[in-house]
Image (spheres, rainbow, N blue to C red):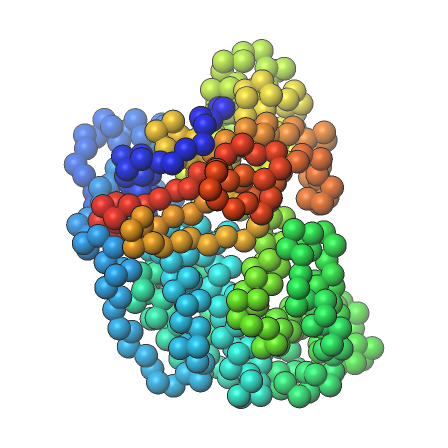
Amino acid sequence: MAGGPARILNLFALIELMLLLLCTHKSFCVSTTNSKSSIQADKKADVLLPYTSPTASPQPFLPLLAPSPLTPFTNSTIPQLSGLCVLNFTSLTNMLTVTSTDCMAAFAPLLANVVCCPQVEATLVILIGQSSKYTNTLSLNGTTATHCLSDFEQILVGQGANDSLSKICSVHSSNLTEGSCPVSDVSEFESTVDSSNLLAACEKIDIVNECCQQICQNAILEASRKLAQKAYNLLTLGETHALSDHSSRINDCKSVVLRWLASKLEPSRAKEVLRGLSNCGINKVCPLKFPNLDRVIKGCGGGISNRTECCGSLESYVSHLQRQSFVTNLQALNCAALLGVKLRRANITENVYSQCRVSLKDFSLQVGAQESGCLLPSLPSDVVFDRTTGVSFVCDLNDNIPAPWPASSQLPPSSCNKTVKIPALPAVASGQTSFDSSGMNSFLYLTVLAALSILI
């Protein structure tokens, strides 16, 4: 499972990748005619995939005809806005363009948890925060929120973004309101919390160390608790109900606190802070869904008596994980730990990762002619659009870190305690700038050329 060297993908490899991405989603594809025998074969081959329908596995798909090259970016459509939203979209034109590119139609589902959705959420927070300078409120009412979210989506789709962002990112109009937080007025907010301490802790966060040091996060939590406390006196409620209700209010108040911070920072700085904070949560989890492990358990049980059978079943299983999405290097570490714990709990105690040469990049979407895993950086990053080179994003193909086998059947407590050294960003080839290149040899700058955009 060891991958090939990092490289710049050629056009044919990219076309292959885009066909895979597009044909993962029925909305981009039409069915081809295949024999019944091939459908039956697909049934057997895909037994590891989660159950989706009572019929056979989907037939292969081919992309429908699509617009001319780069149409979503060079010929943006004019959105039909409601005229009832108080947010100043014009003031964040550049950020909206970045957001639409991060969530471009074909890539949005595969970059959702790492790039697209965090950028969508940050942009909405900044829009409301900036508008509070004139409205003196850090939330929208329900009716206005509905109009604003619709306008927001219309603007992004008009610039080439996926038209299902609300579903992909689980964004609802209620996310733009105050929820159950009792405070949304700016003046009341600033008289309730220690605003100077909050701003000092969060205006210049260390995005590499914040996730473990939690300087800004602790300040946000403290402010959120003070806001939530205003709703009621906890002593008057039953203990269980109080804890549950208070926890929900604190989460809603966190949104209000983030909007206040966004009102005090320049939009670019606010984006850096918000994306940095969101990545702390992103890198703590594994976003992949694990199908049934029976075949791997059968092949690798009994002390790996048959290494060929074991590694074959494990490789087949991992190949199904690779169809789901791009992941960061830290997410891949979490996924490796989660799968390893599942196997250990099934009485597979030998290090099958080492036996079968499983590396961290085997847990991410595979790209290129040699199908090498593409690990995104653990620090926030964006998709970049250039009229000459096309759409691109940075990921690593040369990080052959072996997947660590868990020492027990329990998940590790925190990524801050992990012993595997993983850089925040891939090292960059000559002529480029790197934030953190320790332990890395090269990187992939994935470029979707103009001709490839015909497939979008």
